[in-house]
Length: 195
Image 1: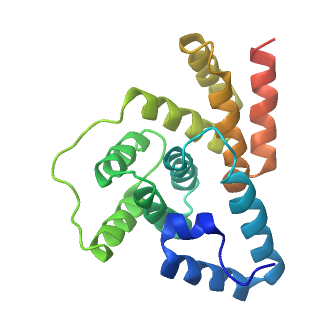
Image 2: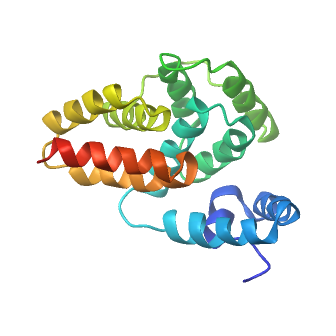
């Protein structure tokens, strides 16, 4: 095991912030840190398919709906460093209000932007249709409501019958942030829908 963060962590958070996260994980548990570096970042974040920006987007949706405030904050940096914009983050929070209370996530975003020397954007912009669909899929999968998950997956497959792989990629990425049981239930649900 190397004594430094994954290259993907460096890319997402910047070397200085990445090293702080690495050291915090190391303080918690060397074995846990090794799993995070090798499995979460070097494997799941490196999988082909979704762009780094889209993986960051799915990660944020999952963390916000699951109220994982500390991790949400670091992943705001990741999203912004993966070519996401602060306008997209504000639009995402507005969109996710339909699922959960986003007040703490909004406060964290304001803190991150302040640390970066930026302000919250004045203008409101909606998510693109693609981002809205991805956010909806990721949110219902993260929450684990099987009835809603089935309806959202079916709707997505009706609109995009040739894009089954997108749901696979979202589920694979959510293993890290939502757990194997959530992803397994999602894959099982998907399998019943495409028979």
